[in-house]
Length: 121
Image (cartoon, rainbow, N blue to C red; front, side):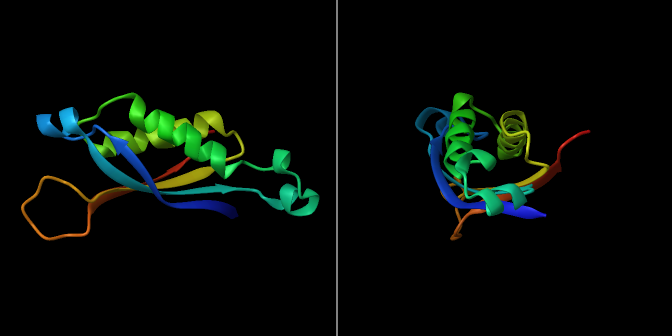
C-alpha cells in the first residue's frame, strides 16, 4: 500500500492536563502517515486523482486547534477521525504527536504518543 507522509507539522494549540497549558498553549509537532492507493495519480499525473497533502495539513490544523483536550491521546484520535472523515481514499493512518515543551522538569527533546488506526468497514 502506498502512503503520504507529513513530518513535523508544527501547530500551536492548548492541550494539556495543567491549567497553564490550556491558558497559554504550546507548540506541538505532528508526524502524519496515511495509507491509500496512489496508482491512479501515478498514471494520470493529476492532483484531482490523489489526496492533497496541503488539504490534509489544512484539515488537521483546523481540527487540532478547534478544541482543548487534557490528553494528547484524545487529540490524536480526533486527528485520525478527521482524516477518515475528510479523505475517503485513506484506509489507514498513523499519528505521532510530539510535545517538546511539556511542563516536566527534565532534559528531553519531546514527549509524545503515537496511534495507528484503520478505517472501519
